[in-house]
Length: 117
Image 1 (spheres, rainbow, N blue to C red):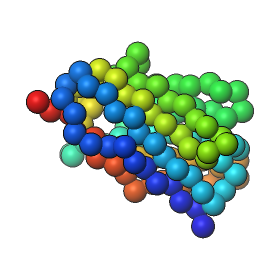
Image 2: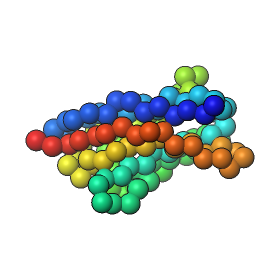
Image 3: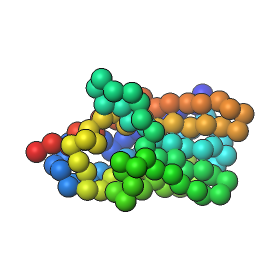
Image 4: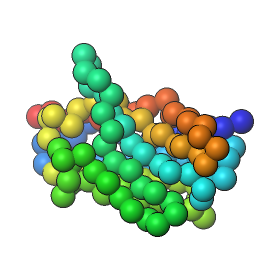
């Protein structure tokens, strides 16, 4: 059974940092493309960052470039999102996403990130 479990969310002041983790199980993690999405109340879900397993290429939304870093540890079946210089606009539920070679897509349950003073 495939599972993606996010952790590391919380409340921070503007300018602070958080590191999100997504622990994966039930599939061959090293073969999967991993992504982080976020969704704020009343807004569409937004793709934040992607890391492609085959070549290590990463991509980021313009709004987070230079502040967020996506990484993965295949030995631990975990993908991370390091978030620095956080802004109130970053407040959202953050979701882990996996896409497998056979085109199956899986989602985590989400973790809340709140940036406020």
